[in-house]
Image 1 (cartoon, rainbow, N blue to C red):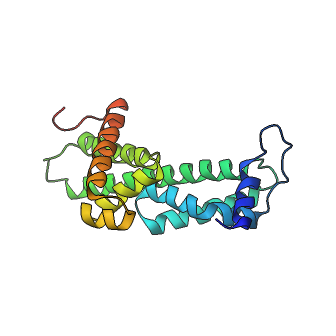
Image 2: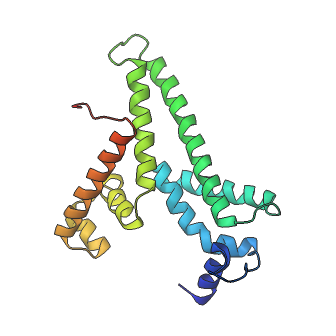
Amino acid sequence: MSNATASNVMLITGPSPGGTAPPKPTMREVFDAEEEGLVRFAYGLMGRRELAEEIVQEGFLALFENYGEVENPRAWLYRAIRNKALNEIRKRKREVLDETAAENQDDEREAPDEVLGRLEAAGQLQLLIADLAYRDGELVRLKYYEGLDYKEIAQRTKMSVGNVGYRLHHVLKGLADGLRKVGVEGRLG
Protein backbone atom coordinates (compact mmCIF):
# COMPACT_ATOMS: atom_id res chain seq x y z
CA MET A 1 0.00 0.00 0.00
CA SER A 2 1.45 3.36 -0.97
CA ASN A 3 1.83 6.11 1.62
CA ALA A 4 -0.87 8.13 -0.13
CA THR A 5 -3.29 5.20 -0.03
CA ALA A 6 -2.44 4.47 3.60
CA SER A 7 -3.16 8.05 4.57
CA ASN A 8 -6.40 7.97 2.56
CA VAL A 9 -7.50 4.87 4.42
CA MET A 10 -6.73 6.57 7.73
CA LEU A 11 -8.77 9.59 6.64
CA ILE A 12 -11.72 7.47 5.67
CA THR A 13 -11.75 5.11 8.63
CA GLY A 14 -12.03 7.88 11.20
CA PRO A 15 -10.10 9.24 14.14
CA SER A 16 -7.45 7.37 16.01
CA PRO A 17 -8.29 6.34 19.57
CA GLY A 18 -8.09 9.40 21.82
CA GLY A 19 -7.40 11.69 18.85
CA THR A 20 -9.46 14.32 17.18
CA ALA A 21 -11.44 13.63 14.07
CA PRO A 22 -9.35 14.00 10.91
CA PRO A 23 -10.62 16.31 8.19
CA LYS A 24 -13.24 14.80 5.88
CA PRO A 25 -11.54 13.20 2.86
CA THR A 26 -12.19 14.45 -0.63
CA MET A 27 -14.31 12.40 -3.04
CA ARG A 28 -11.11 11.53 -4.93
CA GLU A 29 -9.47 10.22 -1.75
CA VAL A 30 -12.57 8.16 -0.92
CA PHE A 31 -12.66 6.74 -4.44
CA ASP A 32 -8.95 5.87 -4.49
CA ALA A 33 -9.10 4.19 -1.08
CA GLU A 34 -12.42 2.34 -1.35
CA GLU A 35 -13.24 1.53 -4.98
CA GLU A 36 -11.37 -1.79 -5.22
CA GLY A 37 -12.75 -3.14 -1.93
CA LEU A 38 -16.28 -2.06 -2.83
CA VAL A 39 -16.10 -3.85 -6.18
CA ARG A 40 -14.95 -7.04 -4.41
CA PHE A 41 -17.76 -6.63 -1.87
CA ALA A 42 -20.39 -6.12 -4.59
CA TYR A 43 -18.95 -9.00 -6.62
CA GLY A 44 -19.33 -11.26 -3.61
CA LEU A 45 -22.99 -10.31 -3.38
CA MET A 46 -23.80 -10.35 -7.09
CA GLY A 47 -21.43 -12.96 -8.51
CA ARG A 48 -20.95 -10.91 -11.70
CA ARG A 49 -18.12 -8.43 -12.15
CA GLU A 50 -19.98 -6.13 -14.57
CA LEU A 51 -22.93 -5.77 -12.20
CA ALA A 52 -20.60 -5.20 -9.27
CA GLU A 53 -18.78 -2.39 -11.08
CA GLU A 54 -22.08 -0.82 -12.14
CA ILE A 55 -23.46 -0.89 -8.60
CA VAL A 56 -20.26 0.63 -7.19
CA GLN A 57 -20.41 3.38 -9.80
CA GLU A 58 -24.02 4.10 -8.81
CA GLY A 59 -22.95 4.15 -5.15
CA PHE A 60 -20.24 6.74 -5.78
CA LEU A 61 -22.69 8.88 -7.76
CA ALA A 62 -25.15 8.74 -4.85
CA LEU A 63 -22.35 9.63 -2.42
CA PHE A 64 -21.40 12.59 -4.59
CA GLU A 65 -25.00 13.84 -4.51
CA ASN A 66 -25.18 13.49 -0.69
CA TYR A 67 -21.58 14.21 0.27
CA GLY A 68 -22.37 17.26 2.40
CA GLU A 69 -24.61 15.23 4.74
CA VAL A 70 -22.37 12.12 4.97
CA GLU A 71 -20.15 11.93 8.04
CA ASN A 72 -18.47 8.57 7.37
CA PRO A 73 -18.15 8.05 3.58
CA ARG A 74 -16.73 4.52 3.90
CA ALA A 75 -19.58 3.18 6.04
CA TRP A 76 -22.14 5.06 3.95
CA LEU A 77 -20.76 3.53 0.73
CA TYR A 78 -20.71 -0.05 2.04
CA ARG A 79 -24.29 0.28 3.26
CA ALA A 80 -25.40 1.86 -0.04
CA ILE A 81 -23.64 -0.81 -2.12
CA ARG A 82 -25.18 -3.58 0.00
CA ASN A 83 -28.65 -2.08 -0.39
CA LYS A 84 -28.24 -1.56 -4.14
CA ALA A 85 -26.99 -5.15 -4.57
CA LEU A 86 -29.89 -6.57 -2.55
CA ASN A 87 -32.36 -4.53 -4.59
CA GLU A 88 -30.79 -5.83 -7.80
CA ILE A 89 -30.92 -9.43 -6.50
CA ARG A 90 -34.62 -8.97 -5.62
CA LYS A 91 -35.31 -7.45 -9.04
CA ARG A 92 -33.58 -10.35 -10.77
CA LYS A 93 -35.51 -12.86 -8.63
CA ARG A 94 -38.77 -11.31 -9.80
CA GLU A 95 -37.60 -11.40 -13.42
CA VAL A 96 -36.53 -15.03 -13.12
CA LEU A 97 -39.81 -15.93 -11.39
CA ASP A 98 -41.79 -14.22 -14.15
CA GLU A 99 -39.77 -16.00 -16.85
CA THR A 100 -39.98 -19.30 -15.02
CA ALA A 101 -43.73 -18.95 -14.59
CA ALA A 102 -44.14 -18.22 -18.31
CA GLU A 103 -41.96 -21.19 -19.30
CA ASN A 104 -43.63 -23.57 -16.86
CA GLN A 105 -47.29 -22.70 -17.48
CA ASP A 106 -47.89 -26.06 -19.07
CA ASP A 107 -45.26 -27.88 -17.03
CA GLU A 108 -46.20 -28.35 -13.38
CA ARG A 109 -43.00 -30.16 -12.33
CA GLU A 110 -41.83 -27.47 -9.90
CA ALA A 111 -44.18 -25.43 -7.76
CA PRO A 112 -43.64 -21.62 -7.66
CA ASP A 113 -42.96 -21.73 -3.92
CA GLU A 114 -40.14 -24.21 -4.58
CA VAL A 115 -38.64 -21.90 -7.20
CA LEU A 116 -38.93 -18.95 -4.82
CA GLY A 117 -37.35 -20.97 -2.00
CA ARG A 118 -34.44 -21.93 -4.23
CA LEU A 119 -33.90 -18.32 -5.29
CA GLU A 120 -34.09 -17.08 -1.70
CA ALA A 121 -31.54 -19.71 -0.68
CA ALA A 122 -29.24 -18.54 -3.49
CA GLY A 123 -29.59 -14.94 -2.30
CA GLN A 124 -28.85 -15.93 1.31
CA LEU A 125 -25.81 -17.86 0.13
CA GLN A 126 -24.52 -14.79 -1.74
CA LEU A 127 -24.90 -12.72 1.43
CA LEU A 128 -23.03 -15.32 3.49
CA ILE A 129 -20.24 -15.47 0.91
CA ALA A 130 -19.96 -11.68 0.97
CA ASP A 131 -19.46 -11.82 4.76
CA LEU A 132 -16.54 -14.28 4.47
CA ALA A 133 -12.99 -13.19 5.14
CA TYR A 134 -11.39 -12.09 1.87
CA ARG A 135 -9.15 -15.19 1.61
CA ASP A 136 -12.06 -17.58 2.16
CA GLY A 137 -14.28 -15.72 -0.30
CA GLU A 138 -11.49 -15.87 -2.85
CA LEU A 139 -11.25 -19.66 -2.44
CA VAL A 140 -14.99 -20.02 -3.03
CA ARG A 141 -14.83 -17.71 -6.05
CA LEU A 142 -11.91 -19.58 -7.61
CA LYS A 143 -13.49 -23.00 -7.03
CA TYR A 144 -17.13 -22.35 -7.86
CA TYR A 145 -17.19 -19.28 -10.07
CA GLU A 146 -14.03 -19.90 -12.06
CA GLY A 147 -14.19 -23.71 -11.84
CA LEU A 148 -10.54 -24.20 -10.87
CA ASP A 149 -9.33 -27.43 -9.27
CA TYR A 150 -7.40 -27.50 -5.99
CA LYS A 151 -4.02 -27.53 -7.70
CA GLU A 152 -4.85 -24.44 -9.79
CA ILE A 153 -6.23 -22.66 -6.72
CA ALA A 154 -3.08 -23.53 -4.78
CA GLN A 155 -0.93 -22.00 -7.53
CA ARG A 156 -2.99 -18.80 -7.60
CA THR A 157 -3.17 -18.35 -3.84
CA LYS A 158 0.31 -19.62 -2.96
CA MET A 159 -1.27 -22.15 -0.57
CA SER A 160 -0.61 -25.87 -0.48
CA VAL A 161 -3.12 -28.14 -2.21
CA GLY A 162 -3.93 -29.76 1.15
CA ASN A 163 -4.52 -26.38 2.78
CA VAL A 164 -6.85 -25.36 -0.07
CA GLY A 165 -8.92 -28.50 0.48
CA TYR A 166 -8.92 -28.03 4.25
CA ARG A 167 -9.93 -24.35 4.06
CA LEU A 168 -12.64 -24.97 1.46
CA HIS A 169 -14.09 -27.82 3.52
CA HIS A 170 -14.38 -25.60 6.58
CA VAL A 171 -15.66 -22.62 4.58
CA LEU A 172 -18.39 -24.76 2.98
CA LYS A 173 -19.30 -26.25 6.33
CA GLY A 174 -19.60 -22.72 7.75
CA LEU A 175 -21.76 -21.63 4.81
CA ALA A 176 -24.04 -24.65 5.30
CA ASP A 177 -24.33 -23.84 9.02
CA GLY A 178 -25.11 -20.21 8.14
CA LEU A 179 -27.85 -21.30 5.73
CA ARG A 180 -29.37 -23.57 8.38
CA LYS A 181 -29.39 -20.67 10.86
CA VAL A 182 -31.51 -18.59 8.48
CA GLY A 183 -33.88 -21.50 7.84
CA VAL A 184 -32.51 -22.86 4.57
CA GLU A 185 -32.18 -26.64 4.59
CA GLY A 186 -30.78 -28.92 1.92
CA ARG A 187 -32.94 -31.35 -0.04
CA LEU A 188 -31.99 -34.12 2.37
CA GLY A 189 -32.89 -32.07 5.45
